[in-house]
Amino acid sequence: MASTGLNFSNLTPDNGAIKDLKRLIFLAVTDPESLGKIFNFLPKQKHGEKVGFIGEFGMVGKASQGCNPTFGTSVLATSEKEWDIREWEVAEKICYKDLEGTVAQVAMRTKTNIADLTGTEYTDYILAPRLELAIRKMLMRYAWFGDKAADTVTDGGNLLDSIDPAYFTLVDGFWKRLFTLAAATPDRRTTCATFAEQKAAMRQNYAAVDFLDALISDASTVLRQANGQLIYITQALKDALDADLKRNNKGSELQWTALFDGITETNYNGVQMLAIPFLDEIIKGCETVSGGKAGNKPYRALYTIKDDLLVGMESESEVADIQVWFNKDEQMNKILSKDKIGTLIADDNLVQVGF
Image (cartoon, rainbow, N blue to C red; front, side):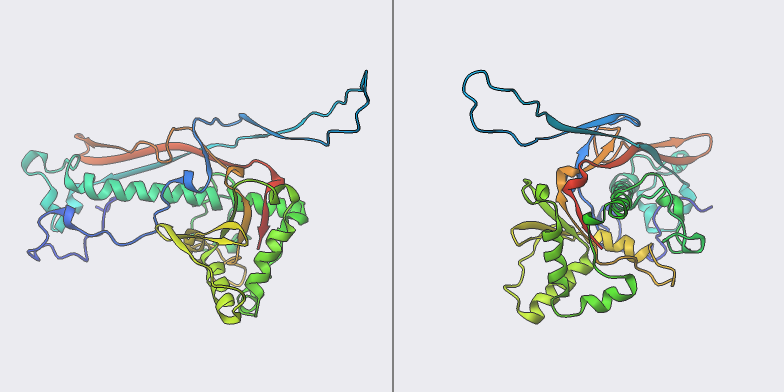
């Protein structure tokens, strides 16, 4: 009976070495770490609630009028948007029979309690941490790539036909909102190239440098003056930029600092820049174009401030509680986790997107 769990088929159960599952070494995977380091994470948000934003005063200050001045009516600019927050769930089950004859059996109980895996090394040290990581990556996927209209290429979308659209259609994420904004307000987009041209175009001299320079210069004056400016880029764009600088010796090569699990940081023309390989993981592994070749807009950049990218959730932490229990009647171990997520771009004037 197939059920959720680890594939132990590649581990020899009688190799004489593995006596304790805590000694297994996890394979390296991208860990998105805390959403709060990339987005403005807002806990305790509710679907349909309004979020109000306060901008700046208009122009103030004229020559003095002396006595009895005329009072102006300048007010603070305000706007509001509405949360679209939807519920997700992870519901899995594990049968102890799937672990018999594998290295995991060293962690199993015996006799009448053999079916109960709760509180064992298998669930506490292997399954639970891996599941928490999977949930974090799920939240990153929805935050960046959620699209309520997502579909496969066969049905007119941009997902590979092998990808289930249900992994994307919960909410609209930042890229969907940014593409929509760029279509409605072309000034908010800096054009890279069409898909067919991008790889060839990015190998041209100064292409990557010129693209990022244009991204900054095209941005609104409001963004250019904002505190905490950030540029988010794909790993593909980082690689192209590094190659461009090295090939053309256009200034010093960028010095990248590793932040956490693949995400690197540098300073580009006075702006903090983050290269996020997770973006490439989804673009290369899930998205495509009509030709069927994996990869959709691989060279993406977003110039903004972190506080403009809002991720709202109902709970107080990025990963909701993971419940694990043993059902005696079914002799099954069950795992359940639920929460809600939604995204908003606070101020459209504080973004410049490049693709």
